Structures are given as C-alpha cells and as structure tokens.
Image 1 (tube, rainbow, N blue to C red):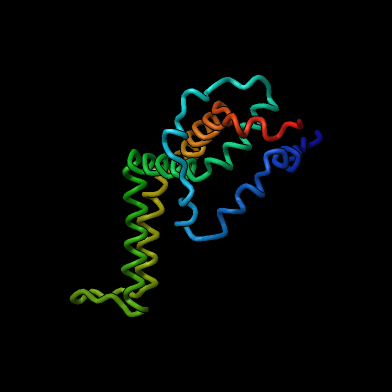
Image 2 (image 1 turned 30 degrees about the vertical axis):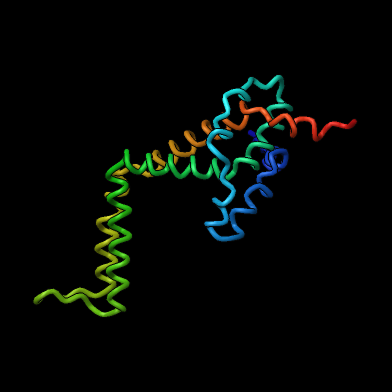
Length: 176
C-alpha cells in the first residue's frame, strides 16, 4: 500500500506562515504589544460579513492576521489563562515544578538539610520528577493543549475571515 504524502509547503506557502511569525522572534515582548488596535476597531460589527468566495476569505485572513496580530496574541493569552484556571490540577503541577526548580536552584548545588534529614540536589530533582510526572499525566495537558489550539484557531480564524477590510484598504490593491 502506497503512502499518501501531503505537500505541506504548498498549503502553508499560500498563508505565508513562515514570514508571518518571523516578527514574534525578533524584538522584546513590550514591542509585541505596542501596536494593539482599539477594541472599537477590533469588534466593529458593521464590518462583519460573509466572504463571497475563498480568495476573498483568504485575502481577509491575510490582512487581518497581520493587522490585528497583537490583538490575536492577547486573545490567545486570555484563552491560555482560562485553560489553566479551568484545569486546577495542571496549574498546580506547573506551579509545583516552577517552585521546586526555584528552591533547588537557590541551594547552589548544596545539600538540603532539615534537622537530621539530608537530600542532595539529584535526590531533590528525582523527587520532583516522581511527583510531577504522574500528577501531570492525571492533569491531561495534551487535551488542554488541543483545546487551546482548537479554541484559539476557531476564534482567531473566525474573526479574521468574517471581519471585512476597511474601505480605504479594500481599494488599495485594485488598479485604476
């Protein structure tokens, strides 16, 4: 039986995914959110309409993903916070790992001594893993991550495809 190969580069090249996320890697985080668009412009219900065909939808998505990229990043962060707040076990596990790494790092390689109890940093890391991995598996981080990808994809791509370009931008690409 022959394998079916899907040319992903053809699919992703139409959306310019490689170039679109190039700006995320360069620059500080404060620069990323410096170009937030106002909420009245982001939620402009007068510009919401169904695209007539696929090329128009693709044009809207390309424009809106670049124009509202900071707003979409805020939407993703808000959905991430909601996902953590609705999965308390996962949030506890993440906080436990971060606090454990911080405390073990503060020891500067010395052993932890509490009364007659003595533990090396290797034993502390092993104990952290023994506790964090089973709790992490119980917390189902993969389903939370898949929910986050799906919810943000539907929200962001839905907004980007339904929100029409502004009037001045709609005619900028046409020849006179």
